[in-house]
Amino acid sequence: MLFVADSAKSRIEEIKSKGDMSEDYFVRVSVTSGGCSGLSYILDFDNESQENDQIFDDNGVRVVTDLKSFLYLCNTTLEFTGGLDGNGFYFNNPNASRTCGCGESFAV
Image 1 (cartoon, rainbow, N blue to C red):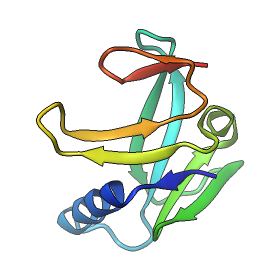
Image 2: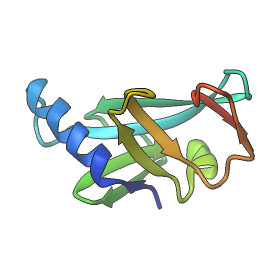
Image 3: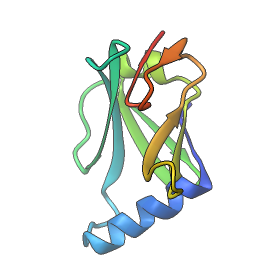
Image 4: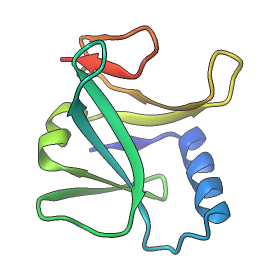
């Protein structure tokens, strides 16, 4: 399962409304090689499903990931912060054994 915090839900709804995205758009999350710690997150909006997509609905938000990425993302919560320390989405990933200082990458 992938989870969506209230903070992320609010920001996703705001982005979708400003971008004139229809209801068929969803959040696509994936993991790729790269970054200081070895793996990086990719977060985007999409409206086309792919073969082997894993689809989750949490807190009124549809989140989609590919099967390979789901192995790294299982039980991860997508969150958003607008504080002085930084502004943006971040992943609370219980599978990450370490993250880089900027939070952009992780290792398992």
